[in-house]
Picture (cartoon, helix red, strand yellow):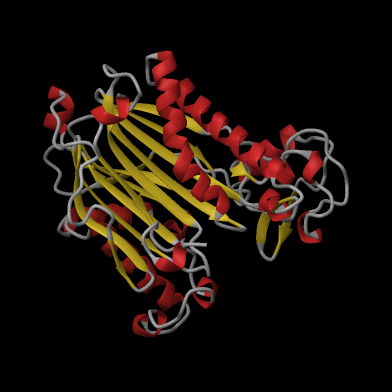
Length: 370
């Protein structure tokens, strides 16, 4: 009965479009405004996943309405990011139904449930697919509901707010998410505090700080080999196995969270994987969104990052675009962008802009299937 009450809106561009390695949705409507999405593939198989769900946020008929945004930056494989894309929102809705509210605690419980489900899958497939223990994903989510914005992040994806002050024609970038990358000093300090007896908890390797000399992020969903000692052994590949045993998880799946009351000056949000922020600053990104047309804006952000990646390698952008997936990863990381515009009138009056809508980025390209 519940499923019959929520029929996601279908239109000619409901699943996005594909142009080579680029997947994009130029412009669509969510409950409180418009949105744009884009994903550029770089790996042999697409490891970035994303979604936007606008409509009921619980399984209860009288539950809250809102917009849910997720960006999942996978590493060492596709399985974790895809699992999150298929399960996190369902877990979130179930927990909202159980608690009859949306809160930071509810979002953390959804992360925890998704982590537990994935680690259970890793254990089930340990002998047939031991590489599943090395697969993980950063996880960034946002929820807009009842005039509030909830942000939760585990990893180094980022959400930036574009804010326009009254009487000011410019736009100010406000980073809302905390990042968990060992290249950030306070993250290294946090790891060293949590693991005081481990002098090798962070190691400088290949000009980057890495947890145990392997991975840059300190929080993720998945990466079972750094969370449960039972997976730190054969048949897992030797490059992932640690020489010394560990007795408590090295990485965490708990996200850092914030709640913000949306103001009329808050105009849009940019959710993006680390691949974008490697090449564009927060301020550069918000100025692109503020100054260019909405239609196709996520794709424009991706292109701006690619042009900067080409410049850094002293090559032409047109030549970079000719490089196929796999080899492309040597020039730039995969990039996922979701731009969410906020209509303050709809937020304040709690009036809705669109029918329920569901879309997943990065699903459509044939190269993304395994």
